Amino acid sequence: MVKSKIIAGPCSAESREQVLKTAQLLSESTNIDLFRCGIWKPRSSPNSFEGMGEKALPWLQEIETIYNIPVCIEIATPQHLEMAVNSGIKHFWIGARTSVNPFLVQELATATKGLNINIMIKNPVSPDLQLWIGNFERFYKAGIHNLAAVYRGFSTGNPLPYRNDPMWKFLIDFKRINKEIPIYCDPSHIAGKRKYIYEIAQRALFLDVDGLMIEVHDNPGNALCDNEQQLSVFEFNKLIEDLIIPSKSTERNNDLKKFREYLNVIDNELFHLLAKRLDIIKDIALYKKEHNIPILQIDRWNEVYNNSLEISQQLNIDPSTAETFLTFLHETSIQYQEKMFCMDL
Image 1 (cartoon, rainbow, N blue to C red):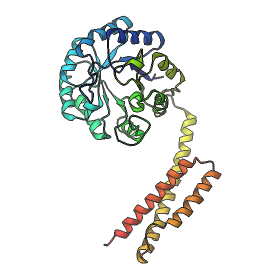
Image 2 (image 1 turned 30 degrees about the horizontal axis):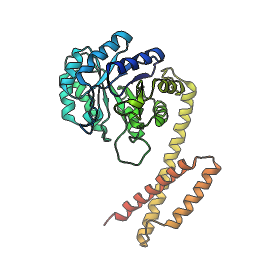
Image 3 (image 1 turned 60 degrees about the vertical axis):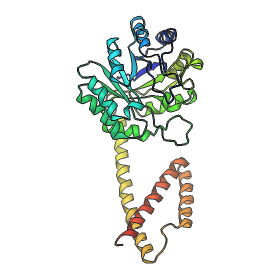
Image 4 (image 1 turned 180 degrees about the vertical axis):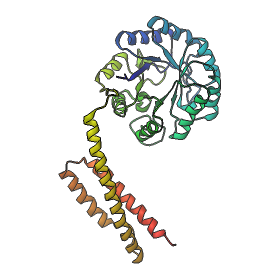
């Protein structure tokens, strides 16, 4: 069985006492795989706390020596990489504000040539799948094959209770295209607030991520940055205890295979029905075009909508699921009819 990786630690190294205390508490209570800690922090304002920088590197060396926990840090320049490697650090992540810039990523990739290190790359701040994939290609060409992805959502401006939009479909698309690259979820940056971290982390685990990267502070209320999204060690332990962590066993499950075969048959039937539905929509579109009738017939749509919701309730289908499905069918119907109306014009 493959175990989900747990990466935990403070947003930033604020003092020697703070990072060693956090590492001590984590080592005493939880078996984490990596101790994460930012020492260079890319902040929006230069008046914000931007990390302790090179001064913090000896503190992280102490953590590895005393508690036997490998540490990982964020790097944004070749100079960061050189200083960290000289201090014995082998695990790094590229942040979202760096991964959005191909020039910076290429400089970092070039600087890694010949090094035996591990690189994790967070998704860019904007949802650009090809840009994210390109970052991995740059490091792979530089000879770095120990790569992993970190999913932390996107800055979209959409009104959400979270700091970042999860956009889970994007994570699924990445996994589908890049099966060989492990992907971890950063629920701290998606959530933005402690109270949402559990639901984000659980959703990510259900989507088969390979691990979690979570911000944990010995005293989060006094943290110098991102204090609302950092967990105390007690809260972190409770989170790990409460999470349902699915097995990543590679053994064949005959029952699951059987259920999937049933789904394949049903999906096949659904697509045949959709094709028949589109044929009828084509006839309707031609009729409306011939008689100069508007595509949208709101009374008809209300009738279909209400009748279908009533049927969905009788079949115990969740109303939100039924509404999403109906909306998809209606929007597809309108788009299909618009194309028919524009033909031969």
